[in-house]
Each structure stands twice: as structure tokens, then as C-alpha cells.
Image (tube, rainbow, N blue to C red):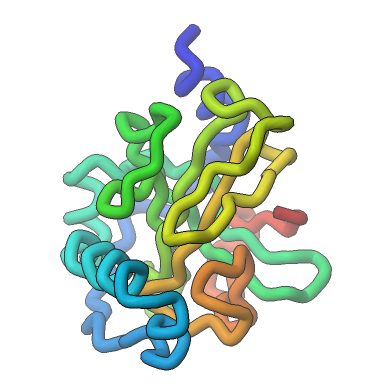
Length: 190
């Protein structure tokens, strides 16, 4: 079995959320002070990431472009650090590499109207490609975090919703799963 298939078999959870579509206007801009504090190169990389993911505010567009596999239900931190939303993956990109313009996961927050709002992306590298004990992968000048629950390295980029905890923090206190179907939520440490 391919490492990607093994990974997805281990973490894919069926949530039965139908076919939500977002009409988000994509008007959010990351805090200039924070993005500038990372330097010109990272600011340019974040701008490039926003350009390549802008059309994915329409969930159907993201799904048609390959981010169609629901990897997790709507996730919240049991410790109260916030939420992440639903993770939708492009399995063709789960290959052990990390490229600014090719995030493996898109994160969507459920809205009151039942639609999904694009809030972030996540880059993942399974331990099968990059061993747990190795030096962490780096992107945007940030080290990936170990996510033992899913046997992978992960790095979030909150480029579509403000995150008071930081643009690269795993949890966002402004994201919640209150509007998700109760059977489609997961509370766990990440």
C-alpha cells in the first residue's frame, strides 16, 4: 500500500457534510505588522499563497482542483486554544515535499448558513517521508510541528482568517465548530 493511501486510511474520518459551498468575499488581509516581521521573502511567499488559494473560497472550485478528500471532521482543541475547522486534502500533493504554492490541506470553517469558509491551509509531511526523529522540515522560515496523532509533520498558515495566536499557530481562537453537524466535529490535541 502506498504511504499516501496508508496515511489517508489512518486519518480520514467520514463526516457526511454534503456539498457545502462558500460565498466568502475573501476580503481578509493578514496583519501587515505580523507578515512584515517575517521579512520580505516570507511576506512575498504569503502573498503568493493567497493568490493561488483565492479561488478556493468557493468550496466546489477547491474540490474540483483536487482538494476533495475530507481528512478530518471539524476540529477543536479540548484545551480551549481554538479550532481548525474541516481539513480537505489533495492526496496527489502528499508526497513528502512542501511547496509554498501547493499546500496539501485546505481548512474550512462551517458558517451559520451551512456553507464553508476558507480560513487557512496546512502543509503536511507524513513520518513515512520524513522521520519523526529527524530535524523538522522548514517552510516560511518556520519549523513544522510534530503531529503524533496523525503520524506527520504539520505547519498551518492562517492566510484567510486573523489568528491572534499567530499566522503559523496550529489553533485559532476565532475558529469554532459551533455550526458543524455534531457528528462532524472532533475535539483533540494537535
